[in-house]
Image 1 (cartoon, rainbow, N blue to C red):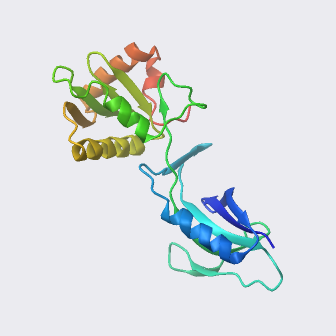
Image 2: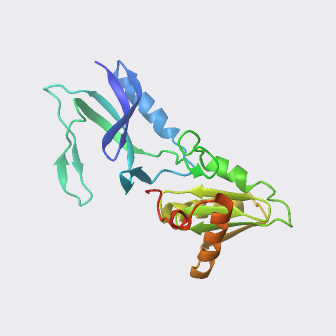
Length: 218
């Protein structure tokens, strides 16, 4: 018998986090993983064919046997249903889990180099203590722009909601650590958005249709 602790994405198998020979070891590892699941900016959306919400779970599983009894669960409407096997595995236990979001920052390889929010905080702090170089942080559609007279960083998020969430999270971090000379502007107004489009085009060389996109889907 091989027990596994696996990660699910919207109810579908994503990867195996741990495998062992005993139920006890599987549950010990499950609880360790759950306890250590400290995520700064959890992934809320997937970009697979379209932008869609995502929920992650970790589960303890075993190979399905004829004598297995499957769990009774409730759906989002409170209706009770019998859980189906995960392929040829029976789920013994599960819980919610968070996965750290990774971002495309302009100038970085969009596939090989996708940093987490920690890297964005580092960029935010470059020259952050200079009274003469106040950095502005503003949401432009699905983009977060961090800039002043000398620095320009552009973070691509999956949609506007994620860009706004990133803006608010960075604001909380800056406030907690008393980072000064950072101006959080929220979401660009109708007047500001055209100014920001011009700035992004100037700094990136992109055309306006690309800059005006609302999501990371082409």
